[in-house]
Length: 448
Image 1: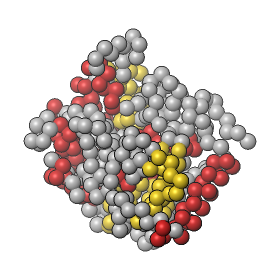
Image 2: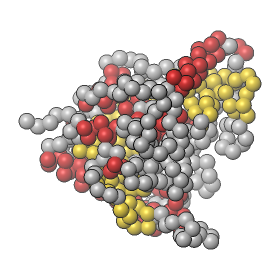
Image 3: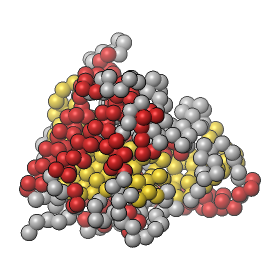
Image 4: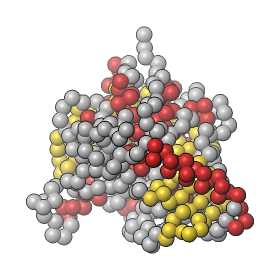
């Protein structure tokens, strides 16, 4: 009998701001229309209030574990050669899916461990191809005075479950241009193989655009008249469309959960300055432009088409939601910050099961979000402006003041009672269940 459990395709863009896509107010205003992603957004649920962590590593950690990154120790990017990533004590989403009969593949940027034992093929993926760390390493070989004898050459890698990962080719500015095309080709081949075999699959596709350096595929150079960032946006839209077409052409759309989103807010560097559109600032801050990202889910027959919601959802929520979809039990021996959102996603209930969350940058709690309110404990609206620890927190109403410019604490001090209770409860949970220290080695055993 055919296995009717849904396939899962998850495309995670890199540093894609809320305001870049046409369906979120960007598109042609950013130099490139995004018709394929815009169309995808109409086929299911488009989120206006989907939230992530402060940057690449913590968001991917929260996605894979259902735990905010302060708990896992994987809360910042670390250079090659230093201890990094998720300990093997953490239970990862692909490990759960694999144990429940899913074929699993990772094509793209990992950033959760770069040594044997912590690479994707060690953590539940049957097959992987991509970057152990991050896209800016592609600039190493073109950098002034770079010496590969001191800092090793960066490589695109690959591996299969049960074996060791190996270097495929040097990751430089040329291979940075072509990698997203390769990732999509491999994902399509994987989905085709599993469909023919009748095996449910999880295709995780963390693509590299729009992370600096924005170097589009040669086929997309000059695709727009506005330079390489808009060319990269055009390429990203095309790549997503290729994956959508593959799912549709394989005849599996009705039994495939298709997810597209971003890991954090936009770039802050020139000449690759991104935009959060309606919201303020960029990633590496606690502003809405950092933590609120484009996100959409298509599941025909389960999620009605054309839904748009401003309900609060967090990236960690995908972990327990997918557990419920496949009939797996969520771990009970550790705090899981994600909440099951299946009934909300499928329209069985109007409201999200989440009203808010605390927000960290690295190991510092910076803000609390609750309903339409945002409490800042530390103030740094632009990256590297110099964080100010506030004696009296700032409070903003995100409906009345989306740019977070006017502190309304004096007139709405009652909100502080709710948000500071959230702070207390989260900090108490860190005392009750001490977090994994960053750089912790395997085997890791949590303190009693």
